[in-house]
Length: 112
Image (tube, rainbow, N blue to C red; front, side, top):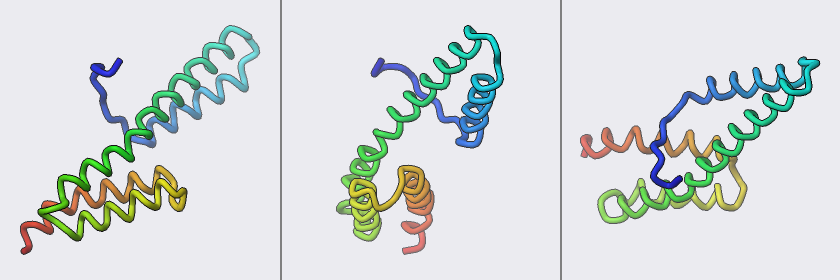
């Protein structure tokens, strides 16, 4: 499974799919449909949690990349990683901050 190709899907779309599966599971009167919706919901949750676990590794990797080239970015990522690991922020918040840092990095290096 490690060699599988991954793709990124908008969080809003994932939430819509999860909500739809929940609605199907709750509103359906047929046992087979409820079971299938629950199975798909669990698969989706499992995949999301597997991908979320790699967030710490992504932050650490970026920290190593910026250690010598961008001390400010390195410090921001270190703080972000500590807050995530210590449970001071959610994975969603950490991912949003990480994405923001990564997006602004090229602009910061061009400015100096």
